[in-house]
Amino acid sequence: MSVSGTVERPGSRAHRGWGRRLASGSLKLHGLLVFIFIYAPILVLIIYSFNSSRLVSVWEGFTFDWYAKLFQDEAIGKALKNTLVVALSSTVISTVFGTMVALVMERYEFWGKLPFDALLYLPIIIPDIAMAVMLLLFFVMTRIPLSLMTIVISHVAFNISFVAVVVRARLADFDRSLEEAAMDLGANEFQTFWRVTLPLLIPGILGGALLAFTLSVDDFVITFFTAGIGSTTLPLRIYSMVKLGITPEINALSTMMLLASMLLVGLSLILQKGGGGIELG
Amino acid sequence: MRRILKYIRQREGLRVLFLIFPSAFWLIVFFLIPLFIVLAISFGRRGTYGGVVWELGVENYRRFFDPLYLRIFARSVYIALATTVLCLLLGYPLAFFIARRPLRARNALLILLMVPFWTNFLVRTYAWILILRGEGLINLVLQSLGIVHAPLPLLYNDGAIVVGLVYAWLPDMVLPCYAAVERLDYSLVEAAQDLYANNVKAFLRVVLPLTAPGIIAGSILVFIPSLGAYVTPDLLGGAKSMMIGNLIHQQFLTVRDWPFGGAVSFVLMAVMLLGTLLYFRVGRKSAERGA
Image (cartoon, one colour):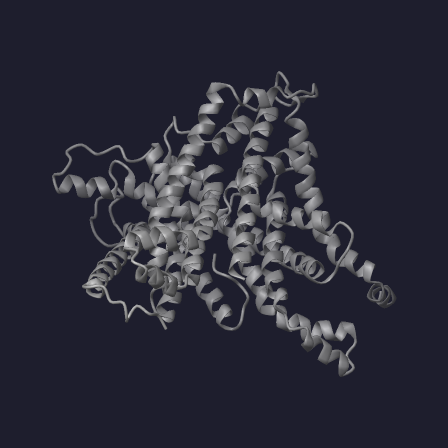
């Protein structure tokens, strides 16, 4: 293909080979260092969570004590319950609404579509802190008392957009001839939707739901501003624990949360293998 | 009920309305209206006991240009820029490294890169406290090796914020760079070399321009959230390393000057919106070029 073989410069090939080996060697080393940078903090956290010393940094021996303490801690149990209640309810609501709106945006033309599209993207773009103060101010001014409910409302407000984006990606490369085939075989629109469109969309919808769930469990800033007394979630609990001082219990709790999110990632990867439309990142 | 459903089925306009209504209602009531409330308040004035006095004016926006607040803004921009540059230095070569592996290894490496970033943001930030603090891992190692005798002040300063932010947003840099590098046609690099370009020249004249959209997209994706950071400076930064996010928090919850807090929020949002528009422009341009 290339003519390089015919116009050989003296020593150029050998020189290039040497330079390339050096470049690829340093790229490998760099890659290794970056991955150490990424995983070191996590490993440190896990190792320290089994450290029997109360002084977090001195290693004294292996123990499960902090985990045992964790499971007896009522405040953390309540925070976990709150987190799950918020995450599950906001995920269900935003998945249903987000899927509906994705169908409209991908398949219909209507008046005001463009500005609505912008509105749909805005919660993704806007900084957490701005959305948090906005919602707090709104709840204060409308005299809606802060509680678990206000957290759920706020989480749905940003999760609808994320679900819609994921489901729309799935809809965009949807093979519509399958729906036409169903119609040709005598299915009406309703049957076509329930028997063809929806089943094919399920991986995308599940992907969106999983993203919404993760975002909800992960959220600190918006929850912090919209939570009432007694509606502490796990991130809020960790925050106040960290602010009070570093203790081995935080390490154990963090490790448990790490484990939980690894499980979720595993689940999403399996979903993806099954043809899901969810993109990492 | 059946008749209503049938009616909805027959009318496309009604169907659109039915599908769009829940989301539209939610986004308008719990997003757009709060947004306009803050916008309106940002033109008001703080009452003596907090709250808002409706004397409209741009005083709050003018106050933002007070050296005190301008310095916080400048520091935020500086920290976000440092984060972006560091992410680029770490992420761009990593994108090359990943892109030149065999396909299976590539996917495995990308997953390996993403896994930690699915874990709780607070947990990830907290892990750095364990490493950076006075009795933390780095100081422990340095002291036991006898390199330093007193612990280094690694935590509670701007450097710690940058480390925390780089750790938080690195994948946002790697993924767009990776997408650009993967698309790169290596025969172009070879052509440049055949035309007597040395490695440096081939990189600067061929590789860099061709992967520029990825670099720009990644930089915007890192810069925007870094600028609006709130948790990272709160936990890793010192008393003096306040960023815009912390200023907004302070104005709303501590000082209770809602109008000024609202104005600061809007300045932040304006900068971010600009960045996002830029991001989409770059995306469209590179798509056009790629076609």
